[in-house]
Image (cartoon, rainbow, N blue to C red; front, top):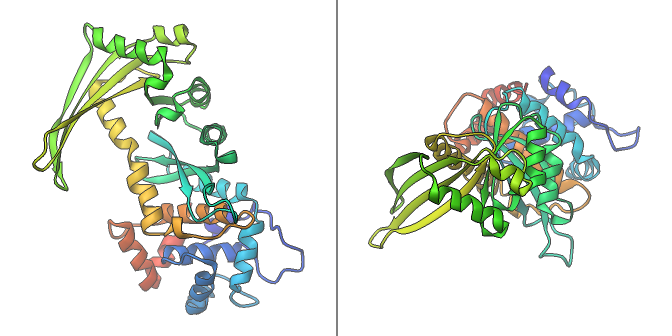
Amino acid sequence: MRKLRRLLRPLKDPRADNTRHDLAEILIIALAATLAGAKTCTEFEFFGRGREELLRGFLELRHGIPSHDTFSTVFRALDPKGLEAVLRKFSKGFGIKGVVSIDGKTLRGAFTPGRRAMPLHMVNVWAAGTRMALAQSKAPNRNEVAGVLKVLALLDLDGALVTADALHCRPDTAQAIRKRKGHYVLAIKSNRGRLFKAAKALIDTARKPTRASQRRTSAHGRTERRQAIVTPASQLAEQFGFPAIAAVGRIDSWRANTGKAAKHTARYFLASRPLPAKKLLEVVRAHWGIENNLHWVLDVLFDEDACRSRKGHAAENLAAIRKLAINTLQATPGPVRTSHKMLEARWNNDFLLRALTHMR
């Protein structure tokens, strides 16, 4: 538990000096409650009262369990940069290598009154190899591009291969990734104009490209077949002022639902280092882990979209607590499924303690 306290020690308490409850203890209770499936400040209080005997084994709790108002006050006032730094420090202990995916996610319940159409938008960073959330950043004025540039500046990407969708196929994003010692594989679409046309032409006329195919797969009534082609394209970097382009690739996929004809889709990518076609297939497949293993888990298991915390910094801070919970569960040996680990944390005190002590 000392490691967990050490992670939280740098956080600055935004409350007055005469507060009754220790900031670290409040955050530890909130994290433990989230591991067990609690979703709101009221549920944090219920969890604390139900597990008070267990919590007193490693927390002082001089004034008992904080009320839901205390939890709410802390999460509204706490600088979200502090908890985000804790998230980065925790995940860094497991290494940042392999595929790192970046994508935006809207917290649909976190909107100010009268602005339902403009809820809080977050940028999340996901490590496919460790299946952990590396970082998060609020998108300023819902500008996801600005949010990505902001979060990239905080990361050490040495050895990582960063993936992002076509929105982020931009020179400034590519430069930010390379500046942090990472490489990129960025999806590119026709909205990039001449650059897209040049990349497409290079693939169409390539003499000795690398090729790879993926075996036909079937799941949920859908059959899919994929193949990739990659060719060098270093000349595009100088020609279009796009940093570090080394190769371009295309993935063709044929998908068919039961009883229907297959539909063909072609997707194009820019890469900052030469990749075998087989590797491109793996990287693009890994990118979608951020949707399936992070965003889906946040919405389905943690009810993130249903969270109505809106005032102050509450939405951002609770988002960081949820990602810390996902990372903690991932780092803790036990059942394979995150949902089953949450049940273990809810019912098994020994598992809950092991999860909390796994924080590095």
